[in-house]
Length: 160
Image 1 (cartoon, rainbow, N blue to C red):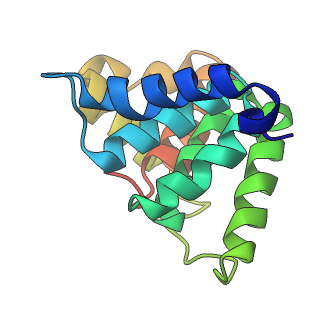
Image 2: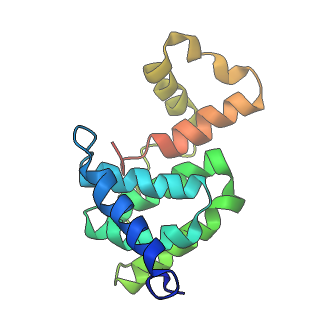
């Protein structure tokens, strides 16, 4: 349904606030890439799939690359779970295919299946300090965070 037809006053106010007022707030501006990346990440987190499907083309038009979009979605899996993220990944794939993007995209991994734990631990140490060097040994959740969250996703090259 088109809100401009069913709820014209609401649509006018929402669009003004979200697309003009907030991005134009003096001293609060983000560059376009960062702003759209934050919006798609927030929509993932709140499970706003319909709004995500509207925002994603704007984000791509503003300069987010397909790789950047995919990396935001991939990184959400560790925080939201695949059950909540899969509809967003499907939406991204559908929109990219509609735009003529060939899938799969070029891989962004910097680890292998053999060194992902080691490199994930190294990444955690770089970010959080030496106290993380042995943290992965304190149970399977810590090991999964090191290998999957930091080794598989955070270490990829699609985002800086």
